[in-house]
Image (cartoon, rainbow, N blue to C red; front, side):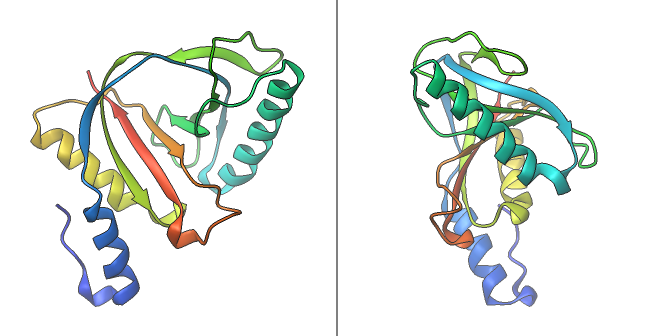
Length: 171
């Protein structure tokens, strides 16, 4: 577990305790079809890129008569905060064809490590560190892709209450 930094104040202590109260687990992931847009962006532009991409995917889903089959997600294929390679997606009940920059694919079946983070998206790093340490402690190795499934809509909850499922597929 990550050490608490009490000198950062009660809010920071509380946030880290919440992260640590959500245990990490390893489970089998079933295949999950999805629609997505893959792009490159900086972390500073991520919010607007996510919003535009989810809007386009939702509009397309409406056109083809389908609804999302789970929480919206982002799959990060690198860790370069200035040039992030990110897939922005929505799970679907069945595999669908895309159109234009929207494509259909499947999150593959396999073992994953995961934990739920509660709080602001801008302060997720300790949760990522906790999950990476958990994976190492279990003698596992992550593939290098990190998924964030956005359980709660940040427009409907306070930032400190928003939950995100962080998932590392395992080799």
